[in-house]
Length: 408
Image 1 (cartoon, rainbow, N blue to C red):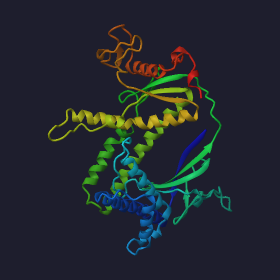
Image 2 (image 1 turned 180 degrees about the vertical axis):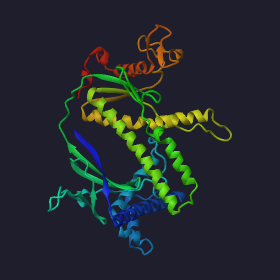
Image 3 (image 1 turned 90 degrees about the vertical axis):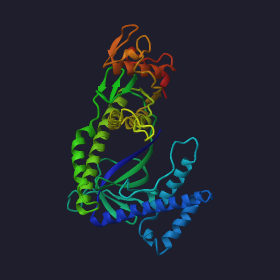
Image 4 (image 1 turned 90 degrees about the horizontal axis):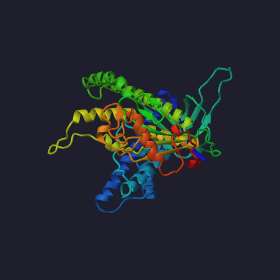
């Protein structure tokens, strides 16, 4: 099995290196914006779009001109990579089967990053100690940047495919994507389980009764974040104090994101180690969290309540949890299944009767057969039944049966 994995380390940069990195990502952003402007001009004149080779010719011209000569002072590979991304983005935008929209211009300090696509240009110095026996940080060599120290929190492992440098919360990070081939995993667990994602009492409830507490990373720091944003509103825009306050807010957002990711990693690891098959609802999170404001002609209803629900859904990280479960189960030899979410909370797991009156509180009470259970557990059991329906003889953990028909 081929495993692609990325490890992310924090860089320990000097002020000079920070300046070089900031200029490099600025050049990448400039190339993207100028190339997008050229493509839009071609489209406006009904001349189609330039392919990757045509964009590279333009980049060479820009780097050799006096007006844009600053591009030559930064590495060329990330600039060429952003042109590849531009070509792919335009292709996806005009693909009728794709849901991706037309690419937008990039803003400064928003998702600043650059990618080195050729691993041969990247070198490492992983000496654990200097000549006097003192511990020293390992270094990574980035073209046009030099040797930069980084915190090696885990082994790299595997063949390096590319390296991405990004800025977040006032710090620089390097993400190293690796690839390695391993033997097909032997699945240790032999149980199947369904999961119901929620926002109130639990982030995920399993069909065997296991419940995971909700993620409250944003809620816990919401008041502090609002207080810091009020301070920002009273400062002169782009002043020194405004920039300091902006950096403080960015660090808070990074702390929230890191806390959420850590909790979801713990949950997904526990589930993937103990179950061979996991069934979830195929939820369209983007549609579920769309704004309810509406328009001036047709204003929305219950906007405040819908806004609070959207905030809770996004705080739980439903999409991230599904993604983590997908690749962790694959690495462990398991399977993730997605089913239609319609009426899973209203159907009775015992008799199958669907009635909106069955679930009016946290306890599910079937109006037809009298079955009672925790509402989320009942929904998770319905999800599991739908996932296992195409496979005869495969039962849930409650039936103590194996998952033979899902074997690799």
